Image (cartoon, rainbow, N blue to C red; front, side):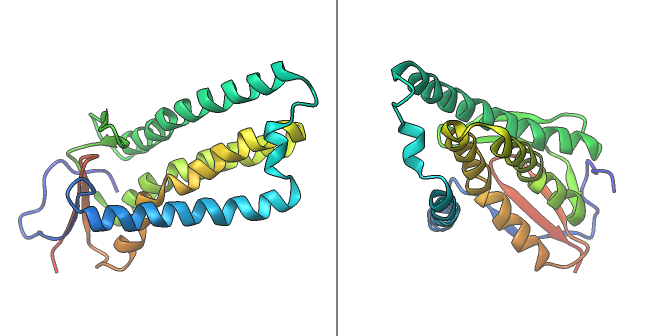
Length: 192
């Protein structure tokens, strides 16, 4: 279904999320993100120790290059994550996507309303796209570069804890929901 620019008359708000004002929810989502990080890092460490990221056996220069790439890739990932949200919004008919950064997180948002299936696709698109890209790269890079890529993969999944939370909540709601995500807050509406 295409995004709609106005809410049908008989719809009413049934749920709202604003991570800026709901500190308790923000703490829970961040705690979930931290747990995801740990659960992803421990098994990978069993196969390729994270110490390989800091290995100086190849010399100081390769180490510095790995660290510089990790920092640059982390910043680029934040931007690319939001661009994928925006591309998905546009694929569902949004004319104007707003991008921003609050100091704590980056966002992509719109004033349009999306049905549940479309919104879940928009929410999970960066996880899927960058998950596949990072998985392929992890499989082909030398061991000394594994953690550079895998840390981006960890950021990909754990950093999407808010997207995962909203997806989980929307699956428990009526089938007819419409979601408006300004990037700073999400409003969920239903006719029921």
